[in-house]
Image (cartoon, rainbow, N blue to C red; front, side, top):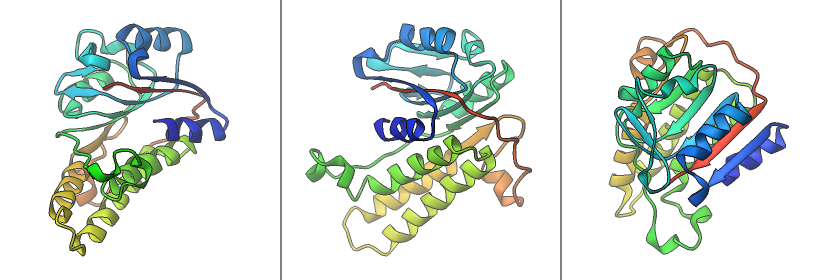
Length: 217
C-alpha cells in the first residue's frame, strides 16, 4: 500500500493513507464522510457480503451500510467480496468497483520475510496489483485497468510455468485463481466471461482527485 500511496502522490493526488492499527471502521467512515475520496484502494479481509479491517472488525456489509460507497470508485484487494458485496455497492450508487470472487492468494518465500520487496514468489502478485493501480491513478478506464491486471497475471503464469522451483506449480495455480476471479462492476460488467466474448466497451474514465488507501490485517 505504501508504494501505491507514493505513486498517487507523485501523480498529484491528495492521499489519505491509513495503515495498521489505525485501520478501524470509524477511520474508514470518517474518511468517507470528511475526506470524500473519489477512489478507495484497500486491502482487508473479505467474504461474500462483508469487508473487514484491522482485527477483522466489520466495516461494510451489503444492504446494511454499503451505501456509503455511493459516488466513489474502489479497488478491493480482498477475498470473495465480488460475489455479493461489490455488486451491492454498485446498486447503491458506487461508480465502479473491482473485486475478487474467490479467495485472493498471494504467496511469499519465508526466506525473504525481512526483504519482501525482493521476494521472487511475491513479485508476480505484487506487479498484478500495483501496476494496474498505477494505470488507474493515471486516468485509465476500468477496462484498461482490468486488461493490465490480466496481462500481468498471464506474464507471471508464463514465467513460473517454465521454472524448476519446487513452488512453481503452486504459484502458477494461485496466479490463475486470482486472475480468473478478478471482476469489475459498474456501468458495464468486466470479467473473464466478457473477455472471452471479445471484451466490452471501455468505461468512461472519471478524474480522480482524492484517494484513500487503507491496509487492514
